[in-house]
Length: 106
Image (cartoon, rainbow, N blue to C red):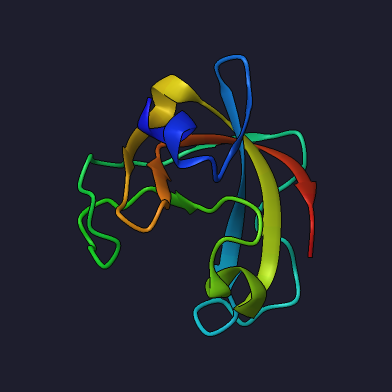
Protein backbone atom coordinates (compact mmCIF):
# COMPACT_ATOMS: atom_id res chain seq x y z
CA UNK A 1 0.00 0.00 0.00
CA UNK A 2 2.82 2.41 0.86
CA UNK A 3 4.38 1.96 -2.57
CA UNK A 4 1.13 2.78 -4.35
CA UNK A 5 0.47 5.68 -1.95
CA UNK A 6 3.83 7.40 -2.57
CA UNK A 7 2.98 7.64 -6.32
CA UNK A 8 6.66 7.61 -7.31
CA UNK A 9 6.55 4.28 -9.13
CA UNK A 10 4.65 2.96 -12.12
CA UNK A 11 2.60 -0.12 -11.17
CA UNK A 12 1.47 -2.85 -13.56
CA UNK A 13 -0.62 -5.41 -11.67
CA UNK A 14 1.74 -6.80 -8.98
CA UNK A 15 4.88 -5.39 -10.63
CA UNK A 16 6.71 -2.13 -10.05
CA UNK A 17 8.64 -0.33 -12.77
CA UNK A 18 11.64 1.49 -11.31
CA UNK A 19 15.16 2.65 -12.08
CA UNK A 20 18.45 1.20 -10.86
CA UNK A 21 21.26 3.78 -10.90
CA UNK A 22 24.89 2.66 -10.85
CA UNK A 23 27.01 5.39 -9.27
CA UNK A 24 29.83 6.83 -11.32
CA UNK A 25 32.11 7.11 -8.30
CA UNK A 26 31.69 3.52 -7.17
CA UNK A 27 31.87 1.84 -10.56
CA UNK A 28 34.15 3.56 -13.04
CA UNK A 29 34.09 1.13 -15.96
CA UNK A 30 33.01 1.08 -19.56
CA UNK A 31 30.99 -2.13 -19.70
CA UNK A 32 27.51 -3.09 -18.57
CA UNK A 33 27.21 -5.20 -15.44
CA UNK A 34 23.60 -6.13 -16.14
CA UNK A 35 22.06 -7.62 -19.27
CA UNK A 36 18.61 -6.71 -20.58
CA UNK A 37 16.11 -9.53 -20.10
CA UNK A 38 17.99 -11.20 -17.24
CA UNK A 39 16.86 -11.59 -13.63
CA UNK A 40 19.24 -10.80 -10.77
CA UNK A 41 18.99 -11.63 -7.07
CA UNK A 42 21.01 -10.42 -4.10
CA UNK A 43 20.54 -10.57 -0.31
CA UNK A 44 18.38 -7.82 1.16
CA UNK A 45 16.86 -7.12 4.55
CA UNK A 46 13.97 -4.86 5.50
CA UNK A 47 16.03 -2.00 6.96
CA UNK A 48 14.54 1.36 5.92
CA UNK A 49 17.80 3.30 6.29
CA UNK A 50 19.48 4.20 2.99
CA UNK A 51 23.04 4.41 4.33
CA UNK A 52 23.31 0.86 5.58
CA UNK A 53 25.80 -1.81 4.60
CA UNK A 54 23.91 -4.77 6.00
CA UNK A 55 22.58 -6.38 2.81
CA UNK A 56 20.95 -3.29 1.31
CA UNK A 57 19.77 -5.13 -1.80
CA UNK A 58 19.00 -3.20 -4.96
CA UNK A 59 18.15 0.46 -4.31
CA UNK A 60 15.54 1.55 -6.85
CA UNK A 61 14.12 4.94 -7.65
CA UNK A 62 10.98 6.19 -9.32
CA UNK A 63 11.58 8.14 -12.54
CA UNK A 64 13.41 11.44 -11.86
CA UNK A 65 12.71 11.35 -8.12
CA UNK A 66 16.25 11.78 -6.83
CA UNK A 67 19.35 13.72 -7.82
CA UNK A 68 21.34 10.46 -7.72
CA UNK A 69 19.39 9.46 -10.83
CA UNK A 70 21.13 12.23 -12.79
CA UNK A 71 24.60 11.64 -11.29
CA UNK A 72 24.69 7.99 -12.25
CA UNK A 73 27.06 6.53 -14.81
CA UNK A 74 24.56 3.79 -15.75
CA UNK A 75 20.80 3.61 -15.29
CA UNK A 76 18.66 0.53 -15.87
CA UNK A 77 14.89 0.36 -16.07
CA UNK A 78 13.77 -2.66 -14.06
CA UNK A 79 10.68 -4.64 -13.13
CA UNK A 80 10.16 -5.86 -9.57
CA UNK A 81 7.45 -8.11 -8.20
CA UNK A 82 5.84 -6.55 -5.13
CA UNK A 83 6.78 -9.66 -3.07
CA UNK A 84 10.48 -8.97 -3.77
CA UNK A 85 10.37 -5.52 -2.15
CA UNK A 86 11.81 -5.53 1.36
CA UNK A 87 11.22 -1.90 2.31
CA UNK A 88 10.43 1.61 1.15
CA UNK A 89 12.75 4.20 2.69
CA UNK A 90 11.50 7.57 3.99
CA UNK A 91 12.87 9.11 0.75
CA UNK A 92 10.78 6.73 -1.41
CA UNK A 93 13.65 4.47 -2.41
CA UNK A 94 12.78 0.78 -2.81
CA UNK A 95 15.05 -1.86 -1.34
CA UNK A 96 14.49 -5.20 -3.03
CA UNK A 97 16.15 -8.57 -3.53
CA UNK A 98 15.20 -9.50 -7.11
CA UNK A 99 14.92 -7.48 -10.33
CA UNK A 100 14.44 -8.05 -14.03
CA UNK A 101 16.35 -5.69 -16.32
CA UNK A 102 13.98 -4.19 -18.91
CA UNK A 103 16.29 -1.75 -20.66
CA UNK A 104 19.45 0.29 -20.33
CA UNK A 105 18.40 3.94 -20.04
CA UNK A 106 21.84 5.51 -19.81
